[in-house]
Image (spheres, rainbow, N blue to C red):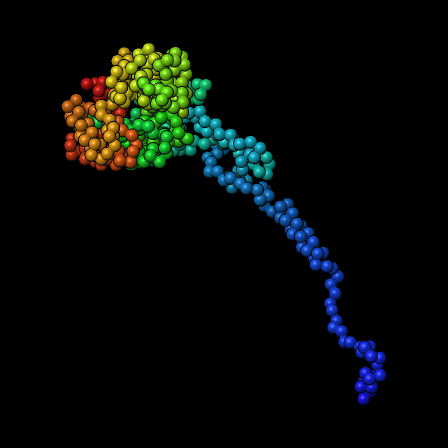
Length: 402
């Protein structure tokens, strides 16, 4: 009754309302967010200062290297990860067949270190040693000479690049039976077709590289690692130059000997380990004795062979090479002049006939897929035909002895 009376006696609109109790936090939501961010920064700073990573989470480049022991070197197990110098591009130095070096910077101490990287095929190989899985020697630094463009071949201590880099062959057998050599040219430009020629054709096939392409040195080294001997093709002036332009630094019949030899050195510096030089195009140049003779003389002086692809009927290469008593060969059959399977097979049959008739014959081709396929199939049947496939150097020596 009392509670009812109190409600009836209370002034109108003044009835006491029951209120729920609310929990009040000592900080706002914005303050809570600020505290969480502050805590994250403290944890991050602590990790950076006290973790075992000396680079503080910076990107690292892991490089597989073969280090020579030095007194002040740390043990390999405790040496920090190598990281490139972001202040300057990593220095990579290469002079032809010389070993390359890269600059490594210790992320914790800042110490700089020059690390040698071996030539292709072996990081630890001595000059002239065979690369793993290969019978071909490495590029011999004794057979290199510095030019203003880089390292170029030279004869030294009575050793010629022609001899040092010739592929293995049974020369005694080659002297007793018909022999054929195949030269695949135009390599270096177009990595895919170059690799196809390197990997799909047997080592006795000689590969000729132009000085162009993104990295002719790397492809040439790969070819030698697969035991192919290689040639350098030097771009020379054709009759319809400049409408038909072989490329930069082309040797021209209108230039003087010094200018052409300077261009020759540029081409020579682009790759190493070749047994000789050959023409890349150049019908006009190889037919111009005044222009061609200084080039032949320079190649002979450096212990190189000379190869003429046979495309220019008026070429003076053979007579000039004979005058210098240098190894020489000329292409007898352009295998894929008409790049169809039937015509390629016909050309290979002609090459067989020439080999049986003269004792040795040389075929030339490009690295077209159809050419590689038909040549590869043809080579597999040579044994039963009594014909021996030989590297170009062996064909040159047999021609000379004949």
